[in-house]
Amino acid sequence: MTGMGIHHEVPGPIKEILDKLVESQPNYVAAANLVMNSGLEYTLLRGAHLTDGNNKKYYTQKEGEPLRCNTCDRIAIAEFIGEIIDHFELYKNVSIGLTN
Image (cartoon, rainbow, N blue to C red; front, side, top):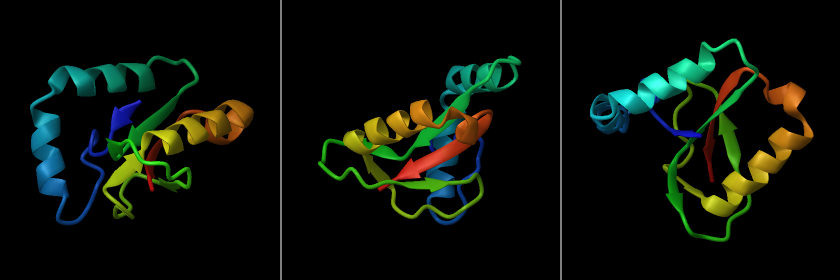
């Protein structure tokens, strides 16, 4: 699990903010890239700003798509991780953004 903007993939006004955050965390980016280039099967989950709400509904986003929302409740992350476990073939070797 990483954060939105890890690959400078978020367009629009929030891009500048996320780009600065990513630049300040080079080890975080290197770790994500290491997993993606490891040859292992993976799902890179890029969550929006995590919140403690009760909204289980989530939206997935491909890299380069505008953010639907800039937050994601932790419970929605848990729901989606369950989806990944149940249907891993659908999410194998991809980078997916998640928002509420």
